[in-house]
Amino acid sequence: MLVCAIAALAAVIVTGLAAGWFRWRAAPAKSPKTAPTLQRLTTNTGENAISASAISPDGKYLAYADKSGIYLRLMATGEIHELLAKGHEVTSLGWLPDSSQLFASWATPPENKLRLWTLSILGGAPRKLSQEGWAPTVSPDGSQIVFVKSPAYGDAGLEIWLMAINGGKEKKLVSTLRSDVLSSPVWSPDGHSIAYVKQEYDTFASVGSIELFNLEQGTDKAVLKDPRLDVGLRWLPDGRLLYVMFESPPNQNNSNIFAAMLNSATGTFEGPAERISSGEGMIAQPSISADGKRLAFNRVNAQLDVYVSEFSAKTAKASRPRRLTLDDADDLPFDWTADSKAVIFISNRTGKSNIFRQQIDETSAEMLVPGTDEKDLCRLSPDGTQVLYFTGTSEKDAAIPDSTKRLHAKTSPRVMRAPLDGGAAQVVMEAPGITNLMCSRAPASICVFSQRLSTEIVLSAFDPVNGNAHELARLKREIGLENSALSPDGKLIAVAKTDENHIRLFSTTGQPAREIAIKNWSTLSSVDWAADSKGLFVTSNPTGWRSSLLYVDLAGNAHELWQVKGRFQSWGIASRDGKYLAIPAPTTSSNVWMAEGY
Image (cartoon, rainbow, N blue to C red; front, side):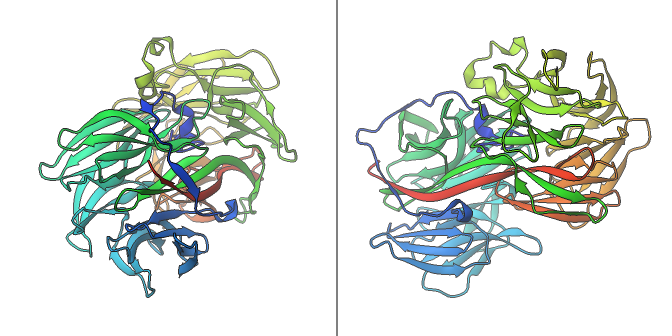
């Protein structure tokens, strides 16, 4: 399994999950002369979080969606009317210029593509606008829209398209590799350019940039690059660009909106940025009225928790998962103790990422490896007595300035080991590009690490005590993030890619490699082995908003065990006796707020 730093993961992947963990440089911003007024517009509980919202161009309506449907709120009176009943998992909303129709996106079976629809606020059936698309914004002259295609995660995708406002004449403007994602396309006030957010991901690092695409010349220019930049753009009529930035530690899981004057002709910001919002949680899906005087946005509070489920390989079924970790922090499971009674996980509950152990019949956890260093991705040694983990960067990276350090973070992580029941940690090895480490389970005694180099992925076996390593396999590095896992019997390494529907199996003993084609599933975001080495736990997330945890036998037959809704990456870690699964899943609340006077 590969853990990717994803922006907005107040936890993980996110990427990497826990994208907020990796953000630190302060934004060059000043407060506006008069603080904006903030008003909360919805009061949904965490069990019915807001999934999408948008304020109308005339500022008179708020459209929002939750589990029960799509609703319209009259801003003047607070009256709420149902527009579309339950049955559509809406991920994106927008408005046509006359404020009488909405854009909406939701996944439609059996392909589960996020199709783009329009619906009237006066009622009637939705009308399909495009076979795929979301996050549309309308050109200043009202004739065209730009929108996102090809899901990656959440609101992000791999392509930005142009289309006539009533459908048709679709044209691809921008596309990117699977290791990058695009989001939030918005028009410049003069209609000549489009700004969007591009996020570049590596296993333990990411950076965001605001890109400016000139429609007449077909050229791109980066106008702002910052590790703390997140999804969400809006261009005000007065020329200011609104964008979303994560805060500096210790508030790195919070994001807020900033505004700066952007000259679309030169592609440069003029003057310092102003802070528009303050508050806890992450900003999502900002929208503005046509006059730019009203700004609505979702305020999302999200964390990843460890869930535990009973599993039977015989029936290929799992019980409904129950939440194990009950704290307000991000908790990510990576292994089990040898007796299968406790989960080993990474948590940022102390302000830094540390390793914890929690019995599955208890409500509290104990820290395993004290110290102030950040720890990433932990595994137990084959005999279950040592915990192996990543920490820190090499000394050669210490001089990298903060503004670029996140791009270089973890280029040479140290692999450490420490006794599970207490004792000093020791360095096992250090090598560039290590993205994963994995160990078999006794009686097998092999450990493997993967290295992500410029053009290749290298899989190597290593000694968990002294770090001595030898190469097992070398793969061409292709488009897409690779996920890998070592079978508990130590004989096979499974490798899956996000843009494929098959898994490659590489032998640790020199046997020929082979493939498993997973039937009826695609967009694989994780791979881990069952305890008996006869099956795999794989997640499939074709829309970017709904991750299905699958049990896949070695013939490629897939059985869905659980769905995790949201943009966060998930996976399944089997206990050593094979009776349980540990699964990361989000606990989320979301409501709509409005700002005026900014």
